[in-house]
Image (cartoon, rainbow, N blue to C red):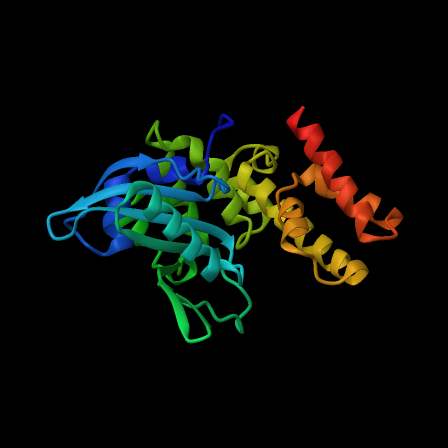
Length: 282
């Protein structure tokens, strides 16, 4: 049975940062210099990976990687904020990249620019968008680009049993990569039956349930449902309430779902959130 491992976004990109930088920027002469902290004064997100890079043509610059399990309509504004914060902190030009992992409904439009205007003043932020479901699965084997290997099942043409088995073999043949099996199994679960995945992996599916990506997927689903319930009960939430709700753990979201029925006014929700914050700090 594979060991439980850190399979977060930063860990994935750190497997081959040079190859990753070349791929996301589409500049073959770009190289990764260092993985920097993306903990800004009022924001810290595990899905943000900031790389200091260099190329002879552009000199030193930053590559801001934002990996999203599912696309969120607020991402254009967030990309603008993240890019500005990174540029201000490190005083380097920033190349922002949004990587969307799972395909949204067909009607969803994913922009590549943030735009706003107020009284004749305009703000814009361009960023590159990479939708993994549009990326050819063979790229993961040809580059080689080990960061993409766990995503093979949801890449274009990667949902075939033969390719999943090929990705698994590559992972198992490398001591640095074999800890990524749970992540490969997680994404395989979107295209293959659980029984087939168990047969391919030859290990207990409880390993999959313990993976951080699976927990994040469960949290996203719980959060989406709770947001609908809160909107139905209290209307649109203010940012100072919305942000603490979004930062709750899956366990806290479950507790909020139970407590919500006893709330009679928005002040009850605020008091509950403040109580959770104190418990977390303690």
